[in-house]
Image (spheres, rainbow over the protein chains, first blue to last red):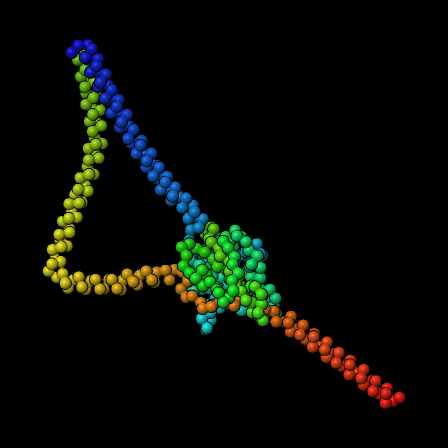
Length: 211
Length: 134
């Protein structure tokens, strides 16, 4: 071996060593980067859906006990409402201390599905009902449902509809949905004798929960 | 110089082996799916073997039982339990109009009309008496 060939051999050996080391180091780095990206993407989807899921995470079943709507100064206990003999939904009794009621065959507020709460717009000679100002709600207004287990489900108004009772949108009100939602129902529109012609329906979606 | 050459050679061999180790490690998992794949086809003929013997009986019984009962019952019941289980009929009647004000106004109107009639009658009586007296 001449000195030149020795130098060349030594350089080649050192070069191959460096290439081997750097290649070995580069691959794991790329792997970790890819994993992190995947992890971030996955956890980004996860956490973002997680944070959104945290903010709109569905709750378990627990009957609502109170309803608060600050925008229209509603703070009412909730009674349980079932079905009347004629198959229509029960409504709260006509009393001076008018209260709203939760339809017990619907999901509880915070559960996946449309939770239905009903209240009177007027209660005969007693005057205004608990949902007298329901039609004044606007998109984004806050609705808070307190539940028997101590948890709270906070909803945001999505839309307010006034529809003729003859054309009551049962599917939109009672139909299945893929997230926790809330329906507030009362009467409205012009009066036909002692009855109101329309229903006012507030559609709201779960915004946050607290244990 | 020999020491230098030998040490460089040793380093190179070490580096090559170190580089080859991950490649060997990577090649190992490729053997796993091959085993799995080899296991799958072995399962297929195992299933296919008994099929020719009781093919008519087995294919007829399980196909009717799970196809009709199990899948049809599961998807229909599940969504109903989670959401509105009983849909009410018609629209909710959540407003009882104030009848008290209507009856009060009606009473006022009736009372006013009665007062007008009484006043008219009284005036008529007074005029008749004055006429007779005169």
